[in-house]
Image (tube, rainbow, N blue to C red):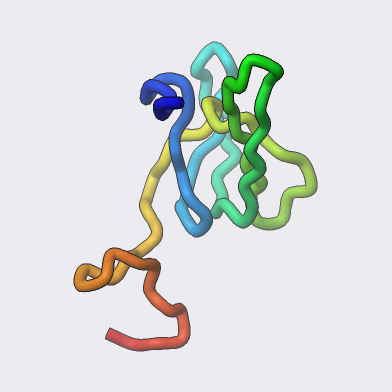
Length: 87
């Protein structure tokens, strides 16, 4: 199965700063850092994601968020930086 097209989800990862929009594309004013991601599959094996923002209890569909800032990654390894280290 291939990745969804860009307009079908933000592909944001945990630690990314995002802004939430309505289905019509109107800014809701909600901004936050993603702390949890859930992936769901339909009977036809189509995948969609929901994300949860820091301080929120409910999940938002991935296509309703837009990335403001990506979480830092280590340029040498490509992995997320350890938050306890200094560069």
